[in-house]
Length: 125
Image 1 (tube, rainbow, N blue to C red):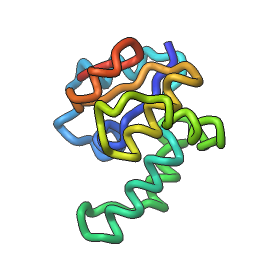
Image 2: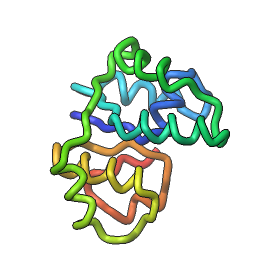
Image 3: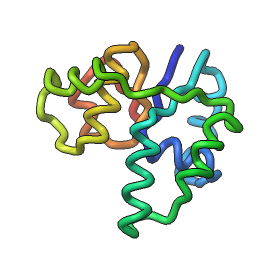
């Protein structure tokens, strides 16, 4: 199984946050591959700069590799696929991550229950 982590799940995984349950950590460890989108780093960098979160984007780039995850670049095909998604969720970062998950294909791991409306490829924590 190949997974794409939602931004908050990635942050929880690399900061040992207790919101990521041991069962979810085990689930991630059993995956064939776990991806972190470049869009997640972009989102973190923007939110950190605006003071919405406390995070070091450069450290998190390094944390992708040190955690055994793989970086998923954003392609023009990913960006264009956003236009085909139903408007269940308005967050542009989440919509780009979903488009990536659907195109690659990857299971999208999130705790955002609103995203369950997209069906199939969503792994709700």
